[in-house]
Image (cartoon, rainbow, N blue to C red; front, top):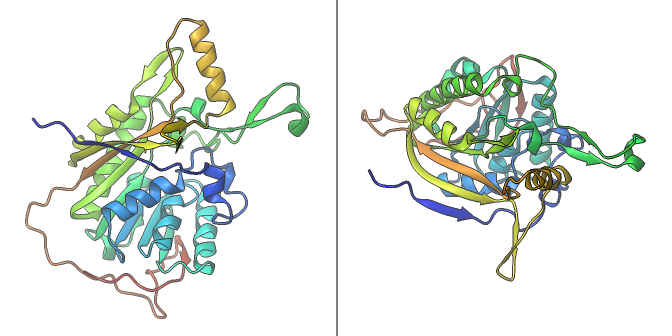
Length: 316
């Protein structure tokens, strides 16, 4: 068996706040696990062409969707939590006001029901699935000092996806992987033959034990009938004069120092594991359909979706 090709993506020339400034509406920073915009943009430009269709089944505040429509692609997203779905819709509308040429829609619901949430007109047409599963509260959140919070010591905020126990962020690893396999199986039905899925994730530690989520997610993708293509490193650190410019959070540094004091040779993680898989091209693909546009242009609108008006997707 041939090894999976590896590559490094230079996706953090500037910090995450700098990449989002002015491009995302206020309140977006509260999501605990936002995809870095440059990672989304790199994946979209690499694995799609202008006019292509991008799907994020766990879209959060809509980073994937926003970057897609700014790049002249069209985007579909589903999100379980109402507050994040609303923000994703606001971010799409903001992108439209900024001149984005792609269309985007957000559908609220459980991604395990993806094929019922996304209109049938788009099934088999998606060029790229781009997403990330929830993982590791220890790598999420923002720091607040005593001066900011009024509380003694350093505190952490915005590290919860929600307080809903049914949210996959709150289940055990085995249940998460079972659910994510189901989601990826649904994604396979929406992808066009030969279409790609890019999944970003990273390992974390619990009580000193490494949780190798990337390898487990790759196995889930294979179980869902997707073929591994590449395993990449998407940098969260910048590059200056040939050296990495790291941007670890306070809690990342604290966790590493605590681990080293216990004798564990832990390093600060400054990349996302980026897994690239694709839908098999066989059996022979049927002729591609062009999604019908509602009057006035734009992606079809349904009663359970929020909508950002823009031109309708073009067939290839």
